Every structure is written in structure tokens, then in C-alpha cells.
Image (cartoon, rainbow, N blue to C red):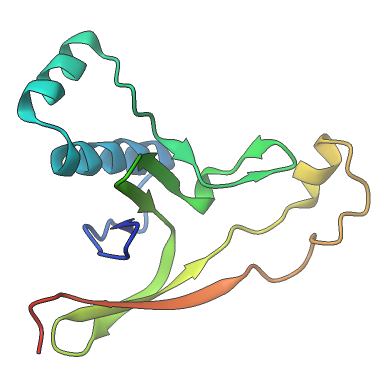
Length: 135
């Protein structure tokens, strides 16, 4: 669910959206909100932008795309995995952000034996957002 740093929700994507597609959409949404049309054209022609989409989380040095993505610098746009997305109030939504599971395979591949986080339930956080125009 892409949102701005201040929590404004800018999109709700399908749950079956591939991580690479979420990464692409996150950049596009950020660029449309932040860049001038001439900058977008320049970056498209050169296929290079000074702003890249980064993964929110690394576990033992391994990139975990399930955690989400971040792009930009003041303002930033963040995309996170959400579950149980539902209507909230007259014009808002509520959802659960869920951290990715800490897998033993990642720990062992990085030489971390007996990692204390393996097998624990992922952290969950309930979030809400209502449009500014709601009363």
C-alpha cells in the first residue's frame, strides 16, 4: 500500500501484485507527485533517475522485498505489504501492516546460527487513514 511519509495513502494495490511490479508502481507514483514533466521526460529518455527505489528491510544483509519499498527524498513514498484492508468510517481505510517472517534459511545462509527471531510471529501494526476532506 503506497503512502507518503506523513501517512497519506496514494494507492491500494492488489495482493497478488509481484514485488517487481510494486517497485515499479511506487517509483511511478512518486515521480508523478514530485517531478516536473520535463524531469520525467529526461529520466525516461536517459533511463536513469537520481532517485532509486530501495528495499525497506534487509535481514542479515539479504534484501527482503516483502517488507516494502521506499523512494525519494523529502518527500518520500513508502510501499508496504498490508493485510485485512477494509473501509474505515465515511471515507477512510484501515489495514494491518505485517513484517515479513524471519526465515531460518536466510539466517543459516548468512552464517547466523540459532537466530532468536526464527519462528516468532511477524510484527503486526494496525493503521488507519481518512481523507482530509472527510467530516
